[in-house]
Length: 384
Image 1 (tube, rainbow, N blue to C red):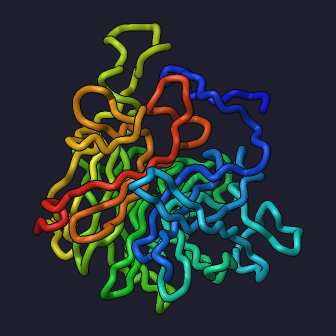
Image 2: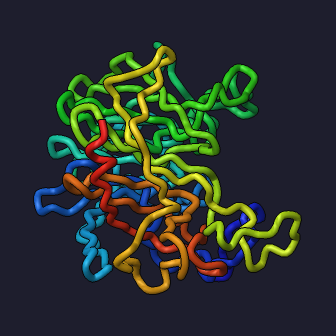
């Protein structure tokens, strides 16, 4: 605990009040909700690779959890944590714990960012490969699948086998931290719809457009279907955070910019003192409803509507003390909002990845918590 975390120079350099290395492993970085719940009604919730990169996360064990948020008390119960391991040598490359008997996985091996629960098994979307990972409910790896688009494998700068020096756009097309941030399970077909977090790179190494690729995978066959689609980002959005179906064809997608912090505390234009303000406040944090059965001529999924997570009505003062802005709407102004799922006919649940200990968002000088919020959105969920 000798090195205090901070949000980085782009976000004002604010300290977060928590120092590395941690004693033990924190439960942090909530990066995905599974659409299907466990038998007891708890939610499968994923954490990411640890601290953002392969280099700083070889001591962070990869895991998923079963959690139950109680929106009456404002508490979240962690019922179980399951650590991923590869004792059967299913992973096709060396892992950090290669020489151990248990072969537990770490943040130097994968960056798990999306999760689904299907027929008693866990499916995880990874960012480093990007790979799809199939595991048992108790965390044992069953198989690992490389991404294929239009018959060609997709790789990134952190894919095992990418040789240095490597030229972006030629030697790899997936941006760093641009793999499967969202992976939805289609209820009727059982297909996995894997969505990249960021646009692919063209041959010049630049983003190919303002859209994200979506590929479909058949778990029953263990292979990609060959079909792909596009999700078009709205103006100002740079990435997505999660992706989950609500019925046979309609699905929720979180889209976001790279901002953090409430716009009410934005730094004045031209100011150089950022100690008490947000130089890059949150501006685009949406939950979008799409129709996967309808596409335009370019293959973009039809956007039906969206809600703005920076403009949430709270007429009954449901926000916990200290979380409300004090004036104006309730906001969810975090850098990475990475969890969304339908709860019932009128409600959705949203949560954030707090990037512990490197993100703020609620309070300057304090590390962000992981927050779960329950939103009443009957109009969005009934829209066609």
